[in-house]
Image 1 (cartoon, helix red, strand yellow):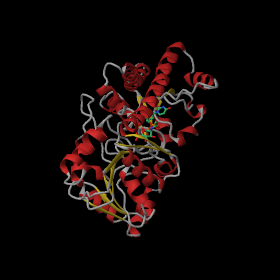
Image 2 (image 1 turned 120 degrees about the vertical axis):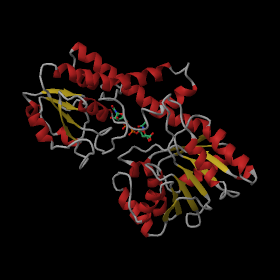
Image 3 (image 1 turned 45 degrees about the vertical axis):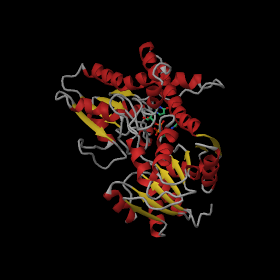
Image 4 (image 1 turned 30 degrees about the vertical axis):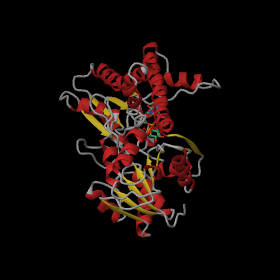
Length: 401
Ligand code: SAJ
């Protein structure tokens, strides 16, 4: 496969698709990015971005200006198709794979013998074979042996996407050996990390396992934080000490687990294996309970004030990003917004403004509030000293002060 003559079509220009498409464009591939939204397509064709990720704007501009990245609402003929569409969950925690199905069907008119189709979206075990490959083989009018299909789950950390896109090791699993080999060869063009070949099903399970591992580990930390609160033990000191053991590495407690990956992906395993996934279900329960526990803690402290002023530090789903999707911090703040007897003050250093809140400078929140609740471990908060907060009631969910 030569970079110069290879046309790539990336379906879905979101948090994974757009960085991937623009990165491949800067590597010399001819890239067509496809998105159902006309606004997204227009923004990208003007060299702009619609999501927040450090340095992504520079990458997109460079790929678009060099003529190597173009966006459209419809796919076109290509040698490699990368599917990076969302896989949301319904209210019963069952995955909705219709975006993957639609994306696969959208390439049917353009696929030809020898093409490689890669599914990067996080999916339930079996999806690459049972949905993507099956649709292609049954509905494309070409010899099924000649299309290559593989799953290569994205593993990049929001906030570090451009670095991790190149440096992370990649698990690549084809539906047969030819597919695996073809996909490995493709990723070798632009990934510096190791390329680890396997089967499609193992690749799917590997991605789910990585996020489930983190969910379970954070659940342990969150459970310890609630136990330590009762026992009057400093949980951060406890974890620090325990982690000095050469084989212990406990993650950090917080206000809950947010974002669209770790709090979601275990459900892919649970929904297909409800009887065998008791640990994963318990971890989800603990992590989902943590924001409720924080709310009760705040209410307990607020009881002694007639009209308490509560200052919240942080709204994002994790440190040093502006992403509020599935943010436990946002849920906690919203709970108090609806109570007329409480005055709520909010600081979020990564946002200029918010539709529902007046965002205030951190020093103003601290000065005016009776109770300070640290919800996110953003860098600026790490400069806060216990001194700055003296005479205040502090609920520090992240162990900052
Ligand atoms: N969190 C804690 N304590 C910790 C670490 C995280 O409470 O010690 C919380 C965060 O505050 C946040 C949530 O967990 O609310 C998730 O944050 P995260 O940084 O752990 O992960 P994500 O969701 O941003 O990205 C994860 C990554 N997966 C792993 O680290 C195994 C990333 O590599 C994946 O590509 C991404 O999910 C994905 O797209 O699946």
